[in-house]
Amino acid sequence: MTRTPHLTSDGAACCWIPLFPLRCETARQPELASLPVALVGPDDTRRVWQVSPLARHAGVKPGMTVSQAIGLCPALKLCEPDPVHYDAQFSRLLAALGQVSPVIEPAELGLAYIGTDGLEGLYGAPEKIVEAIKRGMRNAERGTDGEGPLACSAFPLPRSAFRVGWGRGKFVSWVAATRARPGEAVIVPVGGEARFLAAQPLAALPLDSDTHRRLRQLGVRTLGALAALPEEAVVSQFGRAGRRLWRLAAGRIAERVVGRVAPEPIVAALTFFTAVGERELLVHALDQLIERALRDPRRSGWRVQVVRARAELEHGASWLVEATLKDPSADRGRIAAPLKTQLERSPPAGAVERLVVEFTAFAPGTAELQLFARDAHAAARAGRRRALRTAAQEIKLRLKRSLLYHVIEVQPWSRLPERRYALIDYEP
Amino acid sequence: MKTDRLRAINTPRRVEVELGAAGLPVMVERRPVESVGEIWRIDDEWWRAPIQRRYLDANMEGGKHVVLFEDLMTREWWVQKP
Image (cartoon, rainbow over all chains, first blue to last red; front, side, top):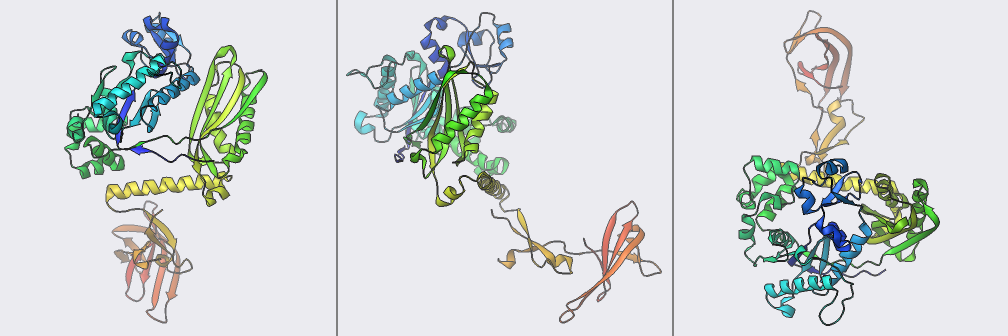
């Protein structure tokens, strides 16, 4: 298997299409545009996932149960999610952006970063680069590039849907995109990051609710207020995460856009003679397909990092689950486990006609890992060691010194109790 | 292994002990001893700095259980986990 080397870029443009799956549905069924619409969750069909502005106006919020949502808005139009369709549409959008820059990093459905380093030679000033990106997105919408049809097909995206942010590093460009008006762009000039970020609300940071609450209790409301605190004080309160937050807020971190490694997915598929609805049969089929994909000679020397299972259902519906393995593996059980969990949690909404397993991302296997790749226990041990190492580093960072020790045997045979064991610094 | 990074554990701690007529503790750090259980002796390192200890199990009033030893070289009392 060959792997395309990573392409990276400090300069970043963030393309963001809020409520991307919902917009895909609206594009597919234009009559929905005038109705209050909600998508039910792909993981939990009892809850509402994405909500159109009209439904939100009626009080429907993401995360509500379907019955609550209908109680608040009897005219609510509920849609089953079609993750395969959203994924395909997003891929088309990425392909369109790929015509503007070779460095594209998808973050989530509807959100992608574009590397902008070197594009000035092609397009000129940042404003021109942003225009090229916007043009690319509009072309994706129309399905043409002005000179000929794009590789991707038409992507009927409302022009006002996308927002573009331009800046140095992914975080600045993301915040800029969230500040942009629909269909417009916000450009943060190089050197102006700290000034731009200072006025932004705390919510722009990737915070968990607890950290957000604690920062607010400390009177910190903006990124500027956070950056005004001494870095070490923030670290002593919030540890490693605090250091990252402070640096993001101060504009000291410019995370590079990393172009996608183009993996050659390994695909194994099974078409059932008659549609299958039994969970046990699907689990068995998943196991068989994973085993078949693992035996593919292209997999040799690589461990699987991202696995995806998708199904074509009766009546044209679809089902898709994807799992990223924290510890890439070549073990069937470890690869299948997250898929089976998701199958239990959110099974296909109908009988399955065709089931496909894809390995879409890989991690290189060292000699050691290859030896132990089939040993789930060894992989688990390695995972625990990594977790311990991270935890120990975190403690050292917070307390300035390590307070973790190993108990070791010194003279276990000694008759004097204090001679038998001792403590030594724990350095996992 | 760098021995300077080693930290001893279970080192003995000096305690104040009041002895009764039988030469056994009746008070440890101003707390009364209810009974004394097993008694044993350790003699070690007689070839350099001799170590001689008399260990005993003491049951304190209230149910607490401690292990004491008397350093027979210095007549000092210490508490230590066995």
